[in-house]
Length: 206
Image 1 (spheres, rainbow, N blue to C red):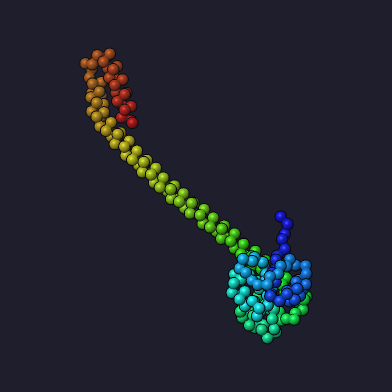
Image 2 (image 1 turned 45 degrees about the vertical axis):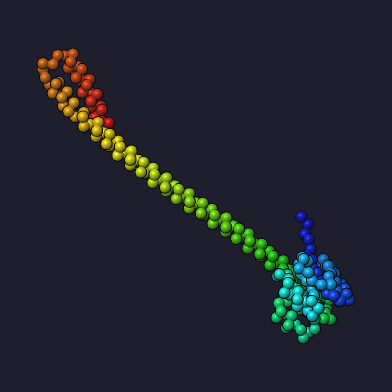
């Protein structure tokens, strides 16, 4: 995208002075107007102090303004908020250099403002990312707590189940053991007792 040269607006009801300023700013992109309007969108304004310049300072909304006027009015112009002042009649080369300098300052301020907006946007994005990370960590901690509670409940259940299973098996195992020691038990029944004891012992290990 080609670079568009900044626009300098000459605001002055005096046609001769407008032309002198336009000639001095030869090489810059210039437009002229007899009076100021907030609808205008230049990058810098050159105006006469006592012919609309003071009113313009109150309506410029941050726009750089270079005022022309009597030498004695320099302090008045600067105190009113002008970015620069040049006595009239002026030196054309000096006016050109001052306007170029103010344009460069304005461009630097715009770049700084844009960079500030970018940094603020990046900071906002970083803050949002940190907040998402914090919420994710909280959710992870909650999940870990839920898993820990579920594991503890499972362990309690298994311990209770194991106890409940072993409790009735103990007398059965004792009975089988006593029967195995009885010599009156026939061999086929003794073999069945071995199977029963093995199964009971397996159940007791659960």
